[in-house]
Amino acid sequence: QEQLVESGGGVVQPGRSLRLSCAGSGITLSHHGMHWVRQAPGKGLEWVAGLSHNGRDTWYAGSVKGRFTISRDSSKNTLYLQMNSLTTDDTAVYYCAKETESFDIWGQGTMVTVSS
Amino acid sequence: QAGLTQPPSVSRGLGQIATLTCTGDSNSVGYQGATWLQQYQGQPPKLLSYRSNNRPSGISERLSASRSGNTASLTITGLQPEDEADYYCSAWDSSLSGWVFGGGTKLTVL
Image 1 (cartoon, rainbow over the protein chains, first blue to last red):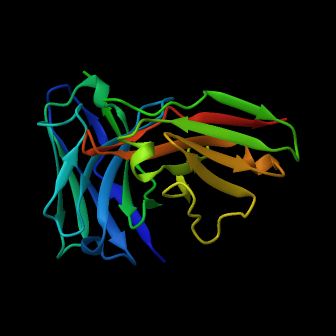
Image 2: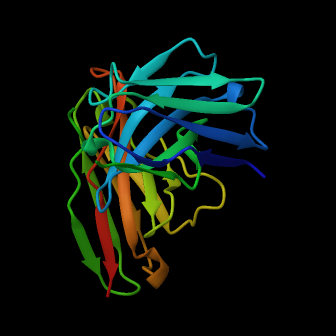
């Protein structure tokens, strides 16, 4: 069964950093494009970042460009999102999603709260 | 970052037909079509349709998607109580080199 499991969320102060992880089970992440999508409390979905299947291309939303970095460790079958210079606007549930034809498999999400 | 436009809410009766719309432009919906996702409260989204009219296995045949120009539509026939959820559209935006989402439509089945 294909499954994605996020971890690494928590409460962090503004200006600090946090790294999220997304472990694949039954899925070889390096065979697929992978994305991070977030959802602020009571709000809609917002695409954050994407990584091509071959790992050569990355894309970022304008709101996180220069602060967030998406990466993958194929040996650990894990996707990462390094988040720096966090602000209160980054408070959200962060989901990782696999892209075959589109966002076809989603994790359960991990909550990030940026608060002083 | 430009997004897609969805009506905030749609209400229809049990057994009726609901059509949800998603409007973008020639760089997004008009470029490669739209993806439709369903989300229940407290749950991750679920893929319903991709590239406007392709339905993954296991998705009800009561759901169909289409596109006309820069507007994508999701039609749900024979509405059931379990169809009550939030529905999001998404598309790759070639001008932004990124994915954009609509604000979501809350479907209420009366």
